[in-house]
Every structure is written in structure tokens, then in C-alpha cells.
Image (cartoon, rainbow, N blue to C red; front, side):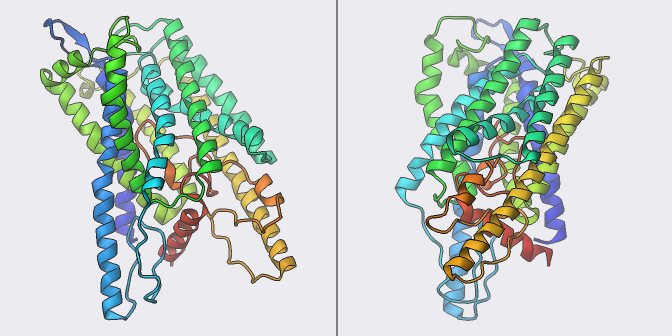
Amino acid sequence: MSGVKTGLSITGLLVFGTTTSLFAKIVYELQGPDRQGNMKFFTKPWAMTTVMFLGMSFCLPWAYWEEHKHKKQAREALSSGNGGVTDPLLYGDSLSATKETAVVRGNSTKDIFMLAIPTFFDLIATVLMNIGLLSVTASVYQMMRGAEMLFAALFSVSFLHRSLNRFHLLGILCCVIGITLVGTSSLLGGEGSSTHDISPQKMLLGMGLIVASQCVQAAQITFEDYFMADLHIEPLKIVGYEGVFGSIAMITVLLPLVSLIKGHDGDGLHENSLDTLHMIFHSRPIAIVLLIDMVALLMYNFSGMCVTGALGAVFRTVLETTRTLFVWLVDLLLWYTPLGFGTLGESWSKYSWIQAAGFGVLVCGTLVYSRGDEVQSKRDHLEYEAHAAEEGQAHPSVLMPGDAAPLPIAGSRSVAASRPMAVRGTPTSFKSTMNIHPLSASVTGGGLMGRSMARSISRSMSRDQH
């Protein structure tokens, strides 16, 4: 990827990522008329979950368009016989100069429908996050999602029987301390919304739901890593198909169901979908925010894949941390300038210093945890070389930064047992504002796409650097 394209991808990741996080909260602060003509806030977490999945589904036609270009490129290489094929932007499998490699592999129906399972996890986690976001500011919401690191490590040890090194443990400790500081500052500051008061009880419940959502997503990672490691689907297709499955589930099952649950509209359980549609069609600000949010979701997913493909998961981790900072800074800018129309954003209080300290600790924890992944990946590679030498196999290729640990030799369990849990640094995590994790990523290749995609990204990264 050229320097200009890389720069645009980085800019897109930060701009669109910040937009999606901010708009997810801003839409809750907007008012529109209900079916009785009364003005009310658009506190519709179930509708926002549907919007998220609809935005993800837009990635599917883009993915097939990229695949069409890929196939056309492969056919031209076959007909010309000169092997002049260059790698497309989103597909990591390198195409060599031979005709045999200039072939695009299709996806089986079974593989596609397997994505319905992680979609179920995503749906639960996203609903919990959206409901939690009702009671906290955008910056606190973004920082609390760093809890996924803790649960992912816990599940990897409990269910996948993996071990953690001292860097992992130190990173997890920093994560716990950082989240505690951020949550404490939010409770002491008492600001969960810029337009109406939020009680400490609701604020605490909101933060608890966000942390619980990260537990669900850590369970999703564990499931993917155990059952779906060899699934071969392009990253953008994964996002698209999960968006389609999630949209179908929301529109046909969950939205009708929550409209029947007794309760007050906007508290997180009951939600009147007819009322939601009326507010969208009769409030231009709400409609515009939702439309921009869906477009930003699409562009954020695309930019994220380009950045990771060109610069690797570690660099992506740093950018996502920067994105969290941007969310906070823009939220402050909205509050203290006319850009927020006097109602949007969040203020700076004397307790904000505690939140800043918590954010700093979270950043340190993320980087330390990633360092643990690097150390473990190198150790796994050395063990693999030793086993390969014992079995008389050819010398394995050099492990690139951000690459997955190689598969262990048959009969060996030491490598697999020691490989740490990948925390959303693989292409499977390139999802919406709800599911891109700002303070947790891994340089190892686990998860849905498995080791083959991680290696292909490393090859692409190496090629672009030269």
C-alpha cells in the first residue's frame, strides 16, 4: 500500500471510529416527536443495535465487489501467463507468478452459516453495551470496554488450558486498576448524560452492563478460537454476513419481542418500534445522525482492515487507543464550544483527573499485554523449530511481526497449551463501533480467520514495508 493510501486509511480509522462512538451516544441526547406528538429523547438501544447490524451488512456488497476484482485479476493473469498479479487490498493470500496460485477460493454455505453463532454473541454483547451507554458518557463507555482483556485471558486459561506470562499478568492488573479508576471518576462526577440527570445506581448498572458485554465477547473469542479457527472467509465478508444475520434476528424476532415486554420506553427493556420509526421519520437530526452512523460504520470497517493489513495489529492497537482519546477530546470540545449546541458533549470536572489516570493505566496495560503476546509468539516459534528439527522437517519460515504462532507438530501439545488468547487483534474483530475494542488487541493470530489469515497479513505487511 502506498504512503498516501496508508495515511488515508489511518485518518479514516480515527475519523470514522471517533464518529461512530460519539454518534452512538449523541443520538440518545436528541429529541423527536412520538406518535402522540410529545417530544422525547431517542433512548432506543434496541434500535441502535439494529442500526449497527445494518451498517455491518453494507460491507457485504463491498466485499463481493472486491472479490470480483480479485477474480478478474486472476483470470487476466491466467490468460496472459506473465504472472503479473498484484495482491488486492483486502485479501491476504498472496498471488505468486504461477497459474496455480492465481485462483480465488470460494466460501462454502456451511462456513457462512457458521457465522450465525458469533453473531449471536455479538448481538447479546451489543445490546448490553447500548443499554449501558444510556447511563454513562461516551468516553467512559469507550474505556470500560478494555475489560475484555481480563475475561479473554480468564477464559483462555479456564477453557483452552493456555498459560499467561508475566507481561500478560501485568497487563491484566493494569486493566483492572484502570477500569476501577475510570468507573470511580464517573460515579464521583455524576455525569452520565448531557441532557438529563442519571442516578448513581443507574450509572453503576450501566457500567456493569458494559463490563458484562465484554465478558460475552470474550466468550465469543474463546468459542471462535476453539471451534472456528480453520474457517476461511474474507474479513469484510465476515462483517457483512454477521450484519445480515444480526439484522434479520433483530427485525424479525427481537424488536417485536421487546415491544411486547411491559415497561417504560427508553429504560432498556421495553421499546416501541413503531414509535421509533415515527421519531426517525419526523426528526431530521435523528435521521441524519443514524444515516451518518451507518456510513461511518462501513468506512471504519474498511479503514481498519486496510490499516491492519498494511501496518499490523500492534499499530492498530495504538491507533485504537488514540481513537479512545479522540472520543474524549471531541466530547469535551462539543461541551465547551457552540458545536455541541449547548446540549451535547461532556464537561471536565475535578474528578476527570482520575479518569485521565485510569485511561493512562489502561493504555499501559494494553501495550504490556501486547508485549506478552510478542514474547509468547517468539517462544512458540522457537519450540516449533525445535520440533521441526526433531521430525526432520524443513526449516519453517521466519515469523513476521504480528504473525500467528505456527501450528504445532502432531503429537506436541506444548505450543498450543502455551499460546495466549488473542484479544481482538485479528481480522475477525473488524466490526462496528460496538465491537471494535479500543483498549485490547493482540499481535498473535487467533480467532475466526485463524492462522492462515494472520500469516497472509504479515506477508502483506512485510511486502509493503519494502
